[in-house]
Image (cartoon, rainbow, N blue to C red; front, top):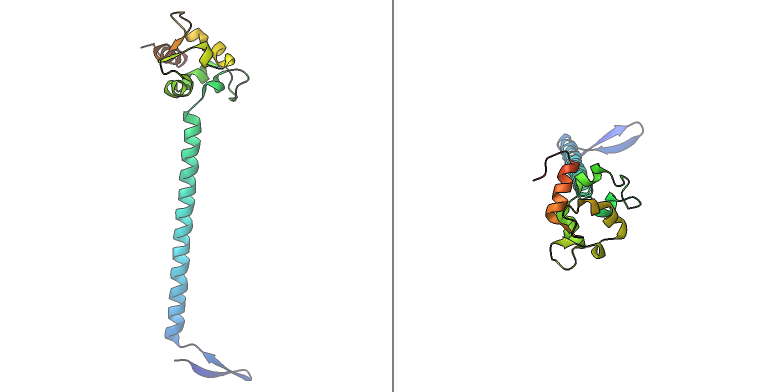
Length: 142
């Protein structure tokens, strides 16, 4: 229950100590849960951004391996070392025969990767690209 107290020249109701304590406890819990929610939202956003960024760094496309492509690295061995061969075949092997022919690739991509055609048959196999990637990484070919 509240009581009336004379404050200055006016009479004002004063909250009972129990109600005031409950209000302080309630405000503390609201503040606590607000901070927890903010931490969870921040962690979720950080995780989502990290996943997006990791996905972009992991999958280097063939266009990134060529001069004038979308990547800034150009046709360097470093870019070839990061090449995702499975993604390249999923994207460009239209007929699904396991070979990449010049007609299936953009001309600049073929020019950059034709050196990987070790058997000179005019097509790139997965093994040839894997071997070229391993050489670019400084490892012996399989």
